[in-house]
Length: 126
Image 1 (cartoon, rainbow, N blue to C red):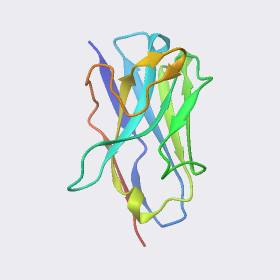
Image 2: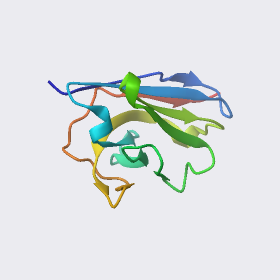
Image 3: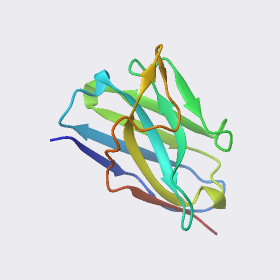
Image 4: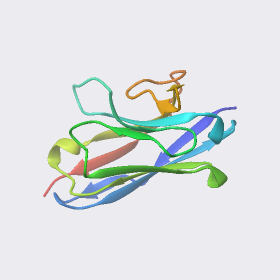
């Protein structure tokens, strides 16, 4: 069955970096756009980034543009989120999900089918 497993989170100081991974199984990754989302305590889950099926088109939340980079390796069934220049406000549980794609672009902030992994905690603190 479909499974999404996020990893790579941890505790990092402001200005530091982390690379998150989303390992997908139970479906063919290159049939779907993928998205990263996050949920901070007391807040709604929000879109962070998405990438289309081929990897040629990406979208980012304004708050992470220029700091985060999404990528995918369809051969490894894995989607990545490279996070640089981390800020305390990036602290959240990060999730990946399949995303809709329209006209070869991922639909930012939307999940295709509301399937989620367990998430990975990112804490940015000195």
